[in-house]
Each structure stands twice: as structure tokens, then as C-alpha cells.
Image 1 (cartoon, helix red, strand yellow):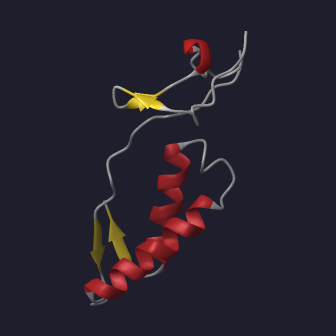
Image 2: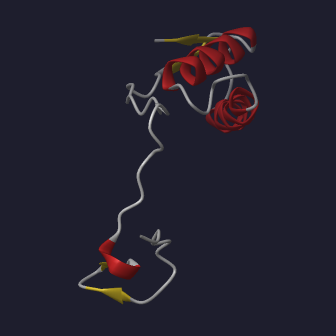
Length: 92
């Protein structure tokens, strides 16, 4: 049985998989797809909206480089919170 990659033609708005085979995680592999609420960020030091957005983008990039952050949403969120708090924000 082959594995469909989904690069082929589309039908009914969705991808076409050869033989209608769906991709699944290998046995024993677990991906943490939990969803966490978006953190709410408050400037503590009078940062402008533009500065807040720039800091948020920088912290998102940095958080993605932390071990296990890509696989675990809670690790990613904790890294963002730590980064933003270090830059003078309150995060809830």
C-alpha cells in the first residue's frame, strides 16, 4: 500500500490522495496538538503598539527555537511569556 502525499490534483475542494490513503503518525509517535488561548500582552513601560508588535514577533521567533517548543504548545507559550516579561510586559 502506498502513501498519498497530496501534491496531485484536487477535487471537491480537498487534496487527492492516490488510493485514498490518509497520512497518519507512525505507531508510538505522539504529537501534542493542544490549543492554548492566545496570551494577552500589556505594556508595563509605556511601549507603543508598534514596539509591542515587534517584540511579540521577536519573542515568537525566539520561542520557536526552544527545545520541545514546536511539539508542545505549553512549552512554546511559556517561552513567549518569559521573553515578553523580560522585555517589560505583563502577560496573562
